[in-house]
Image 1 (tube, one colour):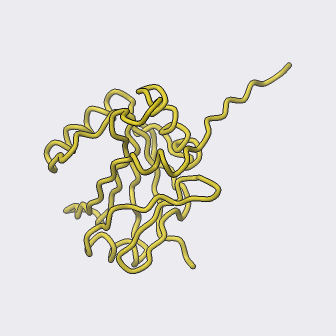
Image 2: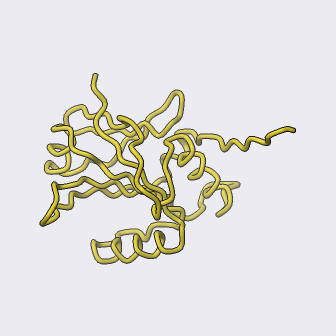
Length: 159
């Protein structure tokens, strides 16, 4: 009896540069604040890039970071964030490269620096450019309801 193992490659920095990233902190009334990262990808635009290759790259990141479908319990995926002053990078599973995140606001960086949890959501559908909070909320509801989002909880990596 043989077991077939599927492996999706972790994309390189060229693919990561095409990713879209949003960060925010949600201060719930009944719970401690949680920081969020929403990670997606722009529609195909590089030579040879298709919707299928973009999704394959994103799924390679899902596999490498051990993210789970958003409808399941959110797993702890290890300390994947590196903070150096205003700069933040995400260890997205590539053996040589990190993904630099657009500079989150001070509240987000303070939360993470203090060891607060970050809910990392990777969505497979293109993220609408320039989407405000209401559009992002509607987008998240849609991708979670259609099983097109994956999540994991992460924290800052100690030096």
